[in-house]
Image 1 (cartoon, rainbow, N blue to C red):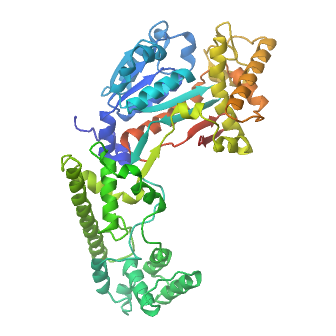
Image 2 (cartoon, rainbow, N blue to C red; image 1 turned 90 degrees about the horizontal axis):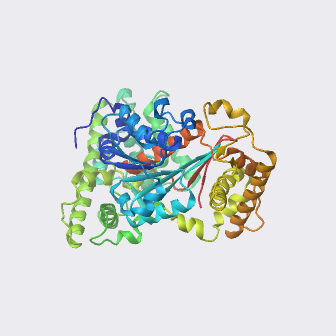
Image 3 (cartoon, one colour; image 1 turned 180 degrees about the vertical axis):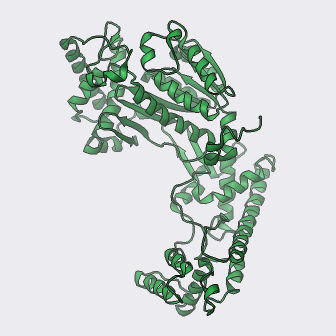
Length: 549
């Protein structure tokens, strides 16, 4: 792997670091169908420096493509769309390899299912339901990652499908520092004992780190309350009032910081219920076939039960705080030393577990173990239903809730109708609102967005009405099959789906493609938590919602 171009990727390196960028540059991405949605998705990944891309598309560039796909031009008309898109993608980033297959994805799925095993991630755009079901089965058999993206008029969706996705660096926006004020370890206690918070020197008094103040006052409180920390609301208020009373002057920011962080003194000890579910997961009973992640979880479970005394390894970082530089640096060293000791303890357990299951004890790098320990409180495990389970199984209670919730009526309506239009196409060999091979739309207010597009005239009113009736019948049948007898969809939404005529409006495609590429980066880098539900974009109401089905 060549050295990362730090100046070229400077901004994104600040987000996901060199480890994330290296993962991107090793990734091999396959795109099925390079219309507007697919092209916009791939454009973002190519600009981000993904290793290589493969485009599978059997169509030729038509005049209609010029109005909604920026990766083709006038000279592309009549040529392979996959080839033209790859040519433009190479111009965006010459460090990314771009190849193509001039074949419809549906045909490739039938002819060579093993073709998809070579890729890190597959992005399927504008594929009908029957093809998606086949692709999902193939990807799951090969332990592949699949992202489904679709734009349809003024709506679209993005869905992820794979068996399991483990995230170490979930990077939550809001997460309290792990200072262990409720359970200081011996080295921290010794550091705190070196301070006198009752000192009269105003300069020193206003520069004692708030961690020291809170640990000192917590010890005083326990001494006066039979070794117990404040639990009741009245006790906690009294503790905070005592803290404020220790201030010599009103400009002591360290005491203000202590008051703000005082909740950490009585914070619940131990691990969160979410993390407990992970360490008690059946996958933590490891074997020679277990992934590195679950080996690390098994070691973490042992650590919590032994050296950790009910706690995960200390992260080791401390927030900025009012303090003399000398005090702050020394406190930082105390936390870093504890984090290092915890990491060493976990590493020892990892090596032992690997040996016991017949794997090389050094097969998991020390850097990976340290990173795991640092993020132990933030671990996430995402599991996804297969498309077959979602489409064929009886209706979920969640879907029934959405159907009865006015706030979700648009999103769930579009979700059902996006499935219904595929059933319509299977039955009538065309999508609703498409007549004589021509795409026709009545959304006159959006014509300006479709310059040079395939909009040709207005369909006869009776043809459109007939398609609306047919689509409604299919949608109602779908709902009945899912056990939602009597559920109703908006008549307006059904009419709009017909008037969309299977069009890909560029603004919608760009938005959906942006979401899909963002999720692809999360999955490839294993950073941040990816979508765990079906993302639906409602361009009519300007709303984006997730449906957990």
